[in-house]
Image 1 (cartoon, each protein chain N blue to C red):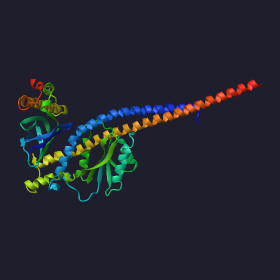
Image 2: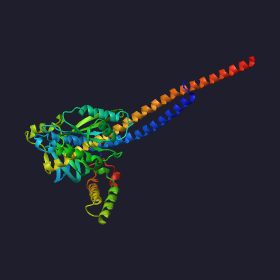
Image 3: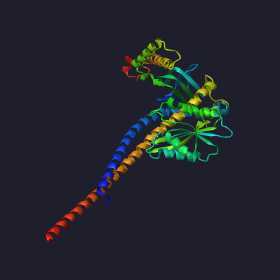
Image 4: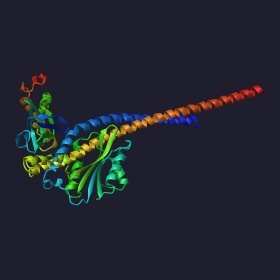
Length: 151
Length: 297
């Protein structure tokens, strides 16, 4: 029996569907959730949520958030989330460079701008990491348009 | 019958009104689209967050879990967050939500204090001598969560410091372009709902009645973070719903106003034609009478 999985970010519904396993970046390390899991409430780290269903795997980057697990449903409330397939590599790359350059200039480390840039840097690194690891594993997710694989 | 020139002046002013209301209608039409999109974008998150909150509130032993879940024995003070618009010309939108809140809390068992969002609601409540502890107006046209989170935090703060013993949220729920319904929602303490009974069902079959959530990292950290934030989020979503409702109400009101003005100007035009015709007829009679008199002399 599959478990239902719903991923929402603050500005939209990202994913809704069945899953055999859901792997989550919990605050104390990765957690794998199977159907009939005991109720659980956890905060999430920056990381990748992987939803596996009938041999297919979808990956989503999340930049922190909360997950609620019920025996029949996993609800991910992410601060920001994206399907790895939707990530725009050139944009993420540009954002990373911009953030790195800014941080090298050495603004006061506790200013708002610094913290914002630091968060932006972590997000873009996470995106690029996720793309490298979860895209282009041919075969497993045949529905990915090949254009994306060329990147 | 009225003087033709007077009627002409009225036609002109009515047509001017129609032009203004038509422009307002067009502006509202585009604003309501944007507000609706923004509202639908944030709705899934807010709905899920609310579900999580009701699940937490439905746990066994919830009374000791977190101060925000504890129901006070006696309700001595009540706080109502009322969401209305900054501007008028929105049909009955502002009046409806104010009438609704007064009906709900007009003679409530405990003294009621208000936090108002929107200038119109504030003014109307003041006129009715209600106690307002805080007011927020001039929100941006497309508010972000950060713009209104302070309001939610304030409500939580008032509750935690025991200045109030319960908090309600009154806003206008957006159904569609022609249907917006004033709604009341109990924010604090979080209430148990039947819908959230699944935790117990699961415990009964799997682990006995004592077990509830497993918390990562710790129960206190996570509840302290989640509950106030998700509560503030409900206020945000209510603001988004109200905003869409306001624009929709204004658009419909302006559409009606334009139609009425067009109809009125049609009726006035008819009156003007009659008056003009009457003048011409009168003049013709004068001329004919004059000619007749000349011919006879």
